[in-house]
Image (tube, rainbow, N blue to C red):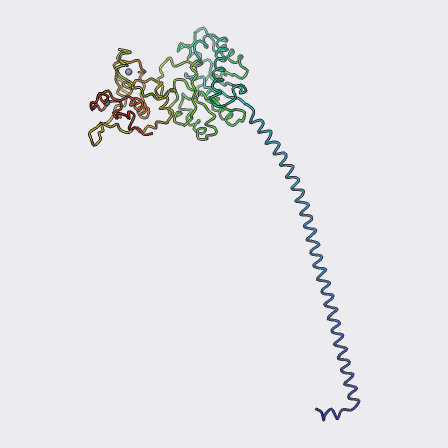
Length: 424
Ligand SMILES: [Zn+2]
Ligand SMILES: [Zn+2]
């Protein structure tokens, strides 16, 4: 190479120098272009970024404004709702009224003869008595007696009701049911004794629809329901019994009877207004069982016989097969078989006031006592409930320390536990 360079002429050097200068110029130019491009690209990227951020910021501001508007709207709605809630609370806390709702077609809810036979004056007195007794009762359901209105809706076919009352001796032939109703209605502004006209279901339908309406109405604080005599109401009332908040607002108003199927529904409040409604004068032995606590007093045949010497004909409807055989424990001591009666069901508590003769209804035979002996077959469960009560009395043989082997003995045989053998 050195020998080769020696051979280069001056011209060659100049050409090479020119070549190198050109190459430098071209490189510098390329560097400049590159920097210019990079600068331009950087500016564009920044612009894009800036533009994107600006758009996002604007969108965020729009969203913020919308949220602010929504929030203000929600606040307005909340204030309106709050105001409505306060209004409703004020309404709910007002004393309201108690509704006495009566199927007055029924024998159990016939007014006393002293009212029915005195036309308008009797109607006025009946309204006064019902008002006073209901006011007494209002305190029992923890309502403000002074500020709770009492409203009465009683429904009946007045013509047929009058005929029945005259026939039963509850009303004089010369008296008018319409005039009685006039007096009743005029005495209290909120009392209505309504004529539903002829037809068996007229009063029933009115009672059902009224109950449906008023159980849902905030102003109606409590309902005293006079419709416990008829099993036809049982399934209808069942839907209310299942809801404690409604069930506890209903009191069963009863006469001599509460029908077994209704008594079993689980209503806990019952009321009887003896000074307003008459007791049965005709056939009805209660299918179930007016209000009474179970007493431990034995139903003694000897005491009963002393009260009456009238013999009663054999009661063929008595379910004597239910007695079965005599059970004994390992020691040979007689024990009473399980009856499967729940001691806490209301109708067991209602039973005693029915005053039914255990000998007559259970064994079919009574030599004479002053209890109830109207021929009426008891169903198996009713039979067991009455047996349950009678078993509160210890068998007189056991009381004397003797053994009782009478398979139809109606009394208890477990000393110290006279009702023993009963599920609860
Ligand atoms: Zn008897
Ligand atoms: Zn016995």
